Each structure stands twice: as C-alpha cells, then as structure tokens.
Length: 90
Image 1 (cartoon, rainbow, N blue to C red):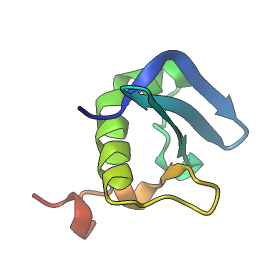
Image 2: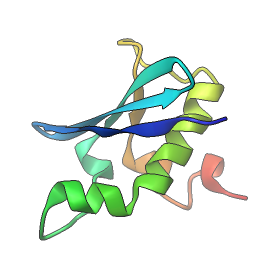
Image 3: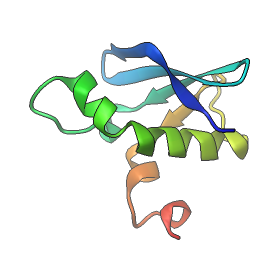
C-alpha cells in the first residue's frame, strides 16, 4: 500500500500547497513548496492534479524513509523533482 491523496483534500496556502494523503487508516499532511509547484497558466489545482502521481510517489518514498520535517509533515521541494537529484535517479 502507498500514500494516496484523499479526494477533495488539496488546498493552496500562500506560496505552497497542502495535500492530505492516506494509507489505510493513516493520514499524512504533505506540503508542496512553491518551487515544486507546476508552472501552470490556468487553474493551479488542475496543474497539481495532472502531476499527482509524481507528488504521491515522492511523498510515499519520503514518508517510508522517515523524511518528515520539524512540523511532522512531508515537504516536497524542487530538489525532490529535479531529475538530476541523486534520490530521483533510477
């Protein structure tokens, strides 16, 4: 099983987005920093939905490895998405 976004639980908060993800009965808040948000001219939520698989995969990996921030949330930044980052190489 892996973390998946709870339907209707995506919010834009200033310069970042917050998603509530679940794995069974576990719920985890995931923040996507502004530098990792899609550069999308239209609806930002739609842009997030189009890349949801990517964000869920990163959040699941970080959560599984205990990569939680000071606030207990998983934070996704541009370095998590950059294909040149060591953790993103196959």
